[in-house]
Image (cartoon, rainbow, N blue to C red):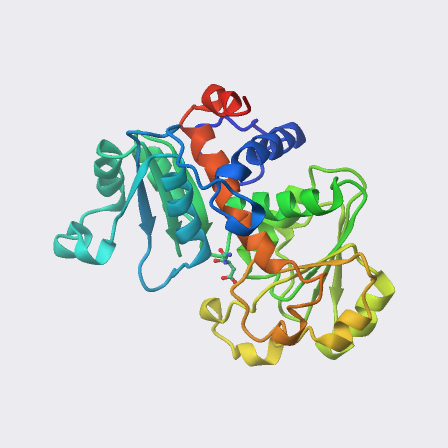
Length: 323
Ligand code: NCD
């Protein structure tokens, strides 16, 4: 495995444990500047990325985004830089059939960073090949979503103080869910991790993502509560059934975490979800202190500030913010 070269962020795989822990340290520096008002943020605009332009290349229609898109833009703004949106549908890709390769060359001519989300898992690889500036994978089809995994790990780390030694139950769509794929890979970097993938038949984790800590539990989702009671996980990571990526009827896979489920979980368990939720989390449990998915989403801003600043080479400027 090649180490992370800090030139692009494509997959979580090249990150070492040290990279991730150093990331936690830098994210902690950004937190007070990340605009999260209820966390006591100073909302002071930094000038770390002043003069830098970030292009948001999010595939329209197929790959809509609320959290990832919004938190990347907010992160760049809090860092003092600018962002612009590249809308394929209003571009020469539609007018003249301009290729991804040429478009990437052109985008990098007027940006310092490209954030890319596309249904085609290969799109990001083309972008990094042809652009002359760094690029970030903000979700490539059903492959990976590495910045989501960094914010997932950071959330666990903040809540528990460490990641080693935890049992994580990942629920739902392990076949198409890119957040599940990169989370399994990210957890692999830590010690004594036990991951249990709980899913209905047909939504198995693809073999290429399964690590030695991974254990598969194909169940009828009506048995979910019993299963969770037996496992007593430290973290439950629920995912949405990715119906937009399926040919078959997705409703056969549906499941719900409700008050009864919460009654089967230990008091210390963290309930996480990358969001958006469909029906898999009953809103009536939002007030349960173990339900931390909104706090998890908030962490997206400082995590993306860290990624942007690192890829643009501003680590010294970031360290200077401690004073
Ligand atoms: C996820 C995604 O797009 O993969 N959302 C996100 O970025 N937080 C999860 C999903 O859409 O189910």
